[in-house]
Length: 77
View 1 (cartoon, rainbow, N blue to C red):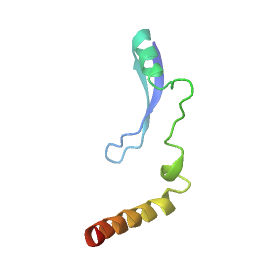
View 2: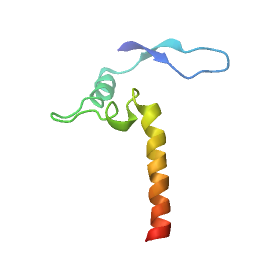
View 3: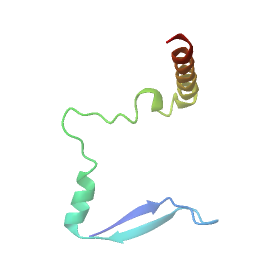
């Protein structure tokens, strides 16, 4: 079985290239099945403080909160 994919690794001044891979059908199904979640599970990379929409705002706030909790732990405990 062959399929095309985009290779994102930049090599020097080259941009990403579209490539074709030839693999066995069972290997293709195995690779595809890795990305299927069980019933009831949700992909979490699109939610919470790591979502792209709010990452620029929330990451600095989380770093500040961690720093403050560390300082609190040193001086008050």
